[in-house]
Amino acid sequence: MADVCKFIGRIFEFQDEVTNGVLRQKLYDEWGERGTLETTTRRITLTLKEMDILFCETRTRYSLKKQIVINEHIINFILSVAMRIDGKSYYSFSDINAFSILFPFEYRVSKEQLMIDDRFVINTFGGELTISIKG
Picture 1 (cartoon, rainbow, N blue to C red):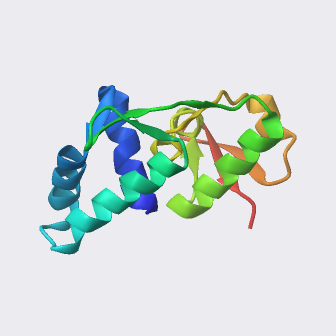
Picture 2: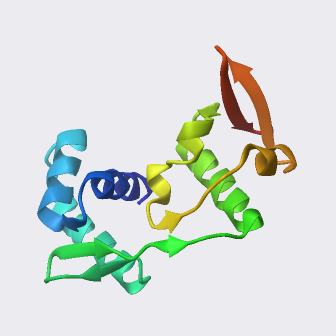
């Protein structure tokens, strides 16, 4: 489900709506044509609809209902979870502010809030600020 949500997030970066057909085609491009993808795509979009993240324009056309998060503790928590799910060793500061897997959430991160949170390690790599999760 995390991969599918990442694809949905990427689609919403460029479009205001997503359809099951567009999502299914993106999944076919990434994973190849599999018989289960059509059913899986529909079930995931219906689940996100039930969670009040997507709302239906028509039967298979969905728009995003942004979830605004302003509490720094919650933002840090969802970032740490997203970083663990995604599995990379480190992220640039710009990556942290634009996680496609966190597509329903609208949030802002400051360097200071990450520095005071014990879950994160801040370094520079190649002259760029990088963030990683502690051990």
